[in-house]
Image (tube, rainbow, N blue to C red; front, side, top):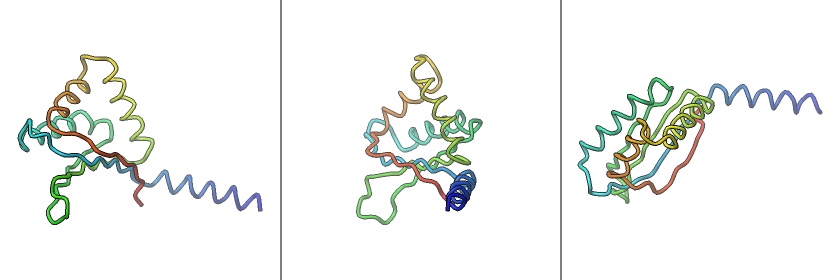
Length: 122
């Protein structure tokens, strides 16, 4: 019985190491910047994030009961890669005058986040 539990744990760890990580943020536009300005911030963010193994796409509602909520969908190779990029982002925010802080200020002008979820994708 103990061997089966260990095998199941190893299988789970192996499966998770091969699963992509999805970072999903629901947000609404503030009206303080245009769609084009916001997408430029996303492009600049990806310039910072892509070398760190993270890429963001924006999902705009097309046919939904809520046409005002947009979704940020960030993808990393796995949860460990996400954690590394996120730690670096947070350290940059704490450092003050950094690229993450400047990007964060630009995001704050454009959007208000309403929720954040984390998923693994197989």
